[in-house]
Length: 201
Image: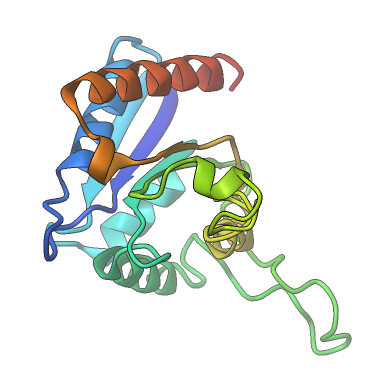
């Protein structure tokens, strides 16, 4: 039985109600719950957090799924605090032991001290920006993908812990394009992604 830990990084702030990422989390749980081969644990970063319990969820899981909006080209402030606090709690406690270097040769092996080897993670993000902003010449992100650009550091953070990345999913034009019709399309496309991803795990 695969153990899946799902983290909802959405939060209420300004004009954002955090509802879309809750919806994406619900879609994920709905998909996984149809198969008895998955045991699921969840966290919502707005809820009260016990740091040691969160560390234990990472250690317990085979796959971690992150759902997050992107605000000002970063993850939300509460989600960043969650990562800072939980990963720090996990020092020599299941998440990482060191930065991987030794004093004998401190120039090499940085980022190899993680303790979460054998685990995989998947990232979903939600954007006001349309997909074309990342792909068309002359547009804002200069033909740089979400994963190679804004979320590059997030992926390196997970690699630092020893986890292996699996293909994620990015929802675009969510703020202006979240019509009832598009929500149906979002769900259909994301469910297809989950089917393909978990078939190959």
